[in-house]
Length: 164
Image 1 (cartoon, helix red, strand yellow):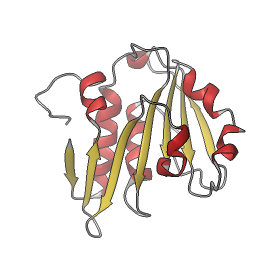
Image 2 (image 1 turned 135 degrees about the vertical axis):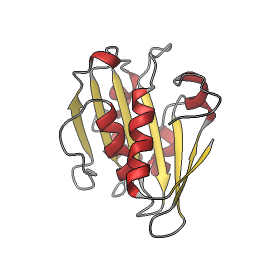
Image 3 (image 1 turned 90 degrees about the vertical axis):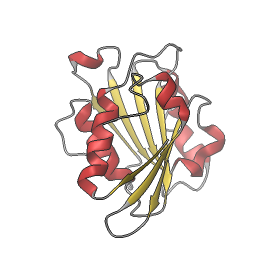
Image 4 (image 1 turned 90 degrees about the horizontal axis):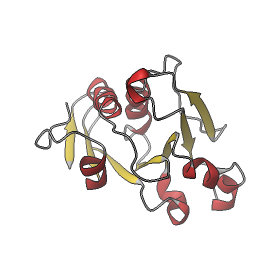
């Protein structure tokens, strides 16, 4: 699925809409989103909207220097999830660095939603069930966002391909 957004606000709204349509996991693993794309491509903007859709009230910034942030979910519409983890692998040189933060355990817990910015840097250790979202910078405001079919078929209502 490919979507063009014409502003950062649309990119945020897309993230929010996707979060609100997530369905329960059928597998015994976390819901993992792997975000890839160039610097300024819209990954963090998308996740700000996604977090809002999950009911997170705190300001969501990319954890570039922290590498990981955890947010507790208190959302009655997505009861099956307890935590939202936001990883930023921009500064990661070796996968071991992220493994030392408990990445495997976090992505194995079905109560977690995990979003990884710059996921292509740790592609070898990303779970098989990762939903890949690729961001392309078209111009100052416009972004092309490609979402893997896994998201469409496993977690969203069938709205004939429509998300928002």
